[in-house]
Image 1 (cartoon, rainbow, N blue to C red):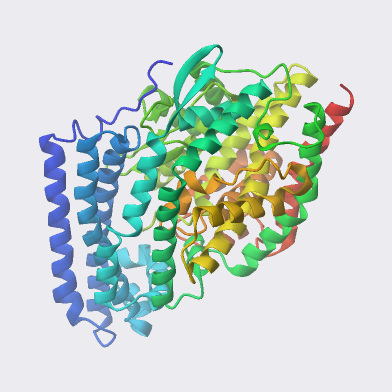
Image 2 (image 1 turned 90 degrees about the vertical axis):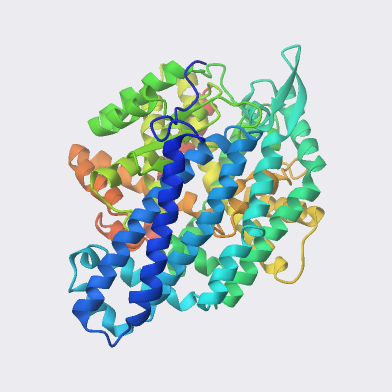
Length: 602
C-alpha cells in the first residue's frame, strides 16, 4: 500500500515546532483566564443575582469554555496521531503526558463550571433568556444543571481529576502500550513473520482454516502471556469507576453510561430485549455457516471465515474508488468529504508494529478536519471499516458546517455511531446489489452478517461481561482467570449452540480498549443502538430518497443538542418500545433468510 499514513502537518508542523509550543502556551492562558472568571465573577454570582447579569456571565463562561475545549481537542488529536501509530515514540508519549497535566486543569474547570450552573436552580431559565449565547446553548445548560446533582464537592472533584492521571488513566495507557507492542512469530505462506497483534487478528478472515486456527491459538497464547498485567489494568480502571460513581451518588456504572448516551433505562431495556429475542435468528446463521464449512458447529476462529471462493480482496485504491462511487449515490457532500479524507491523507491505514489495533476517528476542530486510524488488509470487512470511520468524519463535517461549538457538539455515545453505521450500510448494500452471481452475493452477505452478529450477539456478551465485572469489582479485585471465566460464560449465554463452547475467546477483555477508560463505562450497547437506529434510518431513506438527506444532515448537526428519543421522534421513531428495534432486527433477519436460501441451492 502507498500513501497510507496520515498527514498531521495541516494541524501543526512538528511536535517540537514553535507553533505547537505557542498553542500549548495559549492553552495554559485559556485555563488561567477561565479559572480567574470562575474564582471571581462566577464565585460572586448565585441564584439571587439579577437575570441580566447572570445571562452575561453564562455567555462569557460558554465562550471561554468553547475556546478552551476547541484548542484542547485539536492538540489532543495531534498528539494522539503520533502515540496511536507508534507506541515506541518516546517524545510523543512525553508530550501526551505533559498535555494530560493540562487536561486535568481543563477537567477541573469544566467541572467547576458545571457545579456553578447547577447551583443556579430556578434562576437558570430567566438568565438563559437574557443572553443570545446562553440561548444557543440552552440544551447544554439544562442538561448540565440536571447532571450537576451527581457532582462531588469542588475539592473532591479536583482531587479525583488529579488522581486519575496515576489511576484509571494511567492503567488505560498501560493497556494500550502493552497490547500495541505484543508481536507473534508466525509462519504464513511458508515464510516466518513477526506480526503485530492487529495483523495476527486480521488472519481470522483467512480462507484456510488451518491458518485461522493457528492464528487463534497464537493469539490466545500471546494474550495469556500478558494477562496478569492487563488484569491489573482492568481492575484499576473499573475500581476507579466504582469508587467515583459511589461518591457521586450514582446507582451504578450503567446510570452514568445511560446519561452519557442520552437514553433512559426503558429504552435500553426495550433494545436489549429485542436483541435477546433475536439470538435464535443469529444462531440459525451460525449453524448455516458451520454447514457450509463442513462442520457441525463454528469454533471462534470460524466466525470471520469466508465461505465463498469468490471472496474479493481490494487494493487500497480500489477500496477508495468503491467507497467514493457509492457515497456519491447517497449524497454529493458525503462523496466530497470522503474524497478529501483520502486525497489529503486523513487516514492511517496500514497495520504495523507499535500501532494500535482496531479503528477510530478523531475530530480536529481547529482546522475543521478529521483523522482516521484503521488496519486495512484488503478485505470487504476492512473496506466497510473505512466507510464506518468516514461516517464519523462526515458527522464531524456536518457539525463544522453548521457552525456548532464544542459544547454543542458533545455527542451521546448512541448517536455518535449513527452516521458511521449508515455509511457501512451504504457500501454493503451497494456491494450486494452489484454482486455478479449467487456466490458473490453470498460472500457479501457473509461480511454483512459477520458485522451484524458482532454488534448484536458479541456486543451483548460484552454487556453481560461488563455488568458482572462491575458487580464483582465493587467487592474485590478479579484475577485474570476470573475475568476469562466471566468472558467465556458471557459468550456462551449469547452465542449458545451457534458456537462450540470448547473454542471461545476468553481473552476478548484484554485488547478491547473500550473497557479501559474509567470515564466511559459500558461502551458496548451504543454500537448496537447505532446499528439498529441506522438500519431503521436507512429503511426510511429507501422510502424517501433524496428528500431524506437534508433531514439526516440536520439530525447529525444537532445530535449534541437533544436526547436520542427527541431526535428519533423527528423521523417518527419511538425508541422506548420494542416495535422499532424488532423492525430493524427483522431487516437483518431477511438477510439471514437470503443467506440460508442461497446456501440451500448450492
